[in-house]
Image (cartoon, rainbow, N blue to C red; front, top):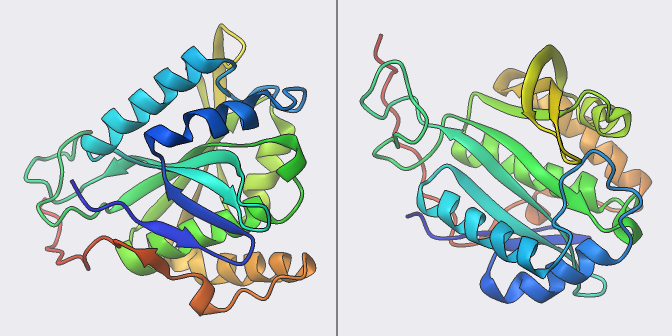
Length: 237
């Protein structure tokens, strides 16, 4: 399993999700649930326990990299986010299949998701900077071809936030996913491609500057335990 890594900016630190995050995550998840709506957020200690267990399983299977989101100003955990649905196109199987890992251990495509923030941390610039840190790592360190996002089609706020990142709406996958409140939801799908990244990055930095944050490259580098530089081979046909 690759070494865990931390991404640190000026507002936020994304640190590997750990056992000792249980109580801070529980506090963040139960501060005020009114704004969570269509987003799954664990609602009690048992649910947070399961959340941590699944995150750990996915990390060990190389299909996700989960983070606790820490507000630097206060040092408190304010939510979570993760790289998920990691795709390895050179894992020796064709077509590439979920769970088969490239020998270099670096994904060729990823999704950013399982993101939620406690209400007092929303609209503060934390989410914008977290996305900038993650997208920079994905496109400039892993050198992925695509980063994907998805949202419940009813969640207009999340859909608008994803579009504001510079992502392109791809369409709707019907009856795609369990809904946060029960039942089955349709998912709106979005993506940013590698050739679109520099334009999206410029927009994200401009948005952070409106929050009074100067996002230099020194603030965007992983601070510890980064994954190795990929040694990629062409994808076999």
